[in-house]
Image 1 (cartoon, helix red, strand yellow):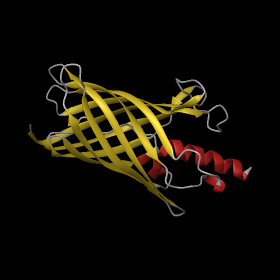
Image 2 (image 1 turned 60 degrees about the horizontal axis):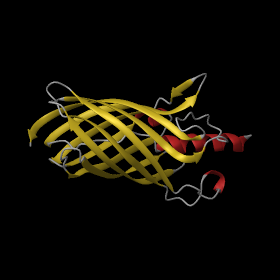
Image 3 (image 1 turned 45 degrees about the horizontal axis):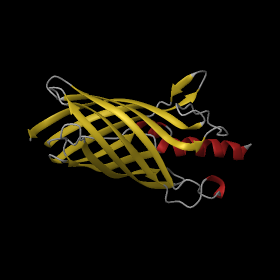
Image 4 (image 1 turned 120 degrees about the vertical axis):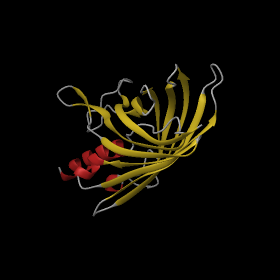
Length: 227
């Protein structure tokens, strides 16, 4: 029975640590500072489909018009005695021309530690996004890539998924003065992984594969804007 509890905890931990929305798909302008937060997670069957209550606080700063550095604190993890942070940079390397989208890439990492263990995961987001309207709102499609460095899982089992690939779609709505943003995202976590025998009752739009995550967030942007 104890082994079952350990496997359940490991399954929850694996999917939760990778479950966060893509951050700053469109980089901030130079010298802009953004403070915000996100809420949501993979959907599970808990008397009905409900997203896991995963929350984060985030901060970003525009080093240049096409380059933003960011960090996030996982507040839900902290409630359970874990110190978990994520950080990275977002770089836009192609600008939109009619139907050809903007393209951005965001390498980064996720780190978690407690009194028993410490884990580190490199990650890479790649997104295509299209601005529209006077406020330059945008929608995007892309993929999140998580890389597991450990060769074993819980109970010293062989690591079967060293690379977790998760497609995503989202939309960012900008306020009238463009000093705040409302973010939404749907993420398809490991849509190629069979979840029919998982201890955690994940619900997925892809049926018995992977898990589907829903996220909503808000950020406030301050500081000098330089185009």
